[in-house]
Amino acid sequence: MNHIYNGMPAAELGEDGWQKPWSGGNGGNCVETLKLADGRVAIRQSADPDGPALIYTRGEIAAFIQGAKSGKADFLVG
Image (cartoon, rainbow, N blue to C red):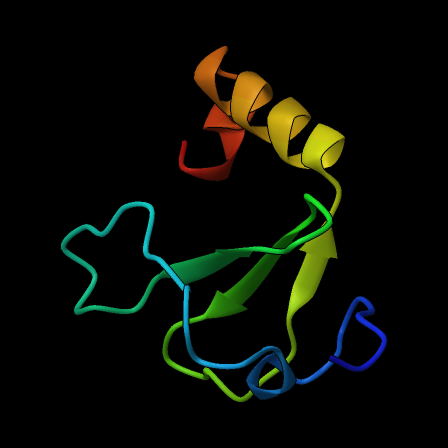
């Protein structure tokens, strides 16, 4: 696999292994995640699977999830 970098075309990461961690009543538009071999996580928009992938470390994903669970992102939907 080529060098993995933030903003790379998600299609370059392949199509196998992408998951939708949750989906709501949004017409099927949601994020998809891919756990990379080195532990990082790629995120892409399901409506644009060939668009850019955002690449996060395991620690960054953990901090985001913990923050969301504790209500620190509630302002985004309030």
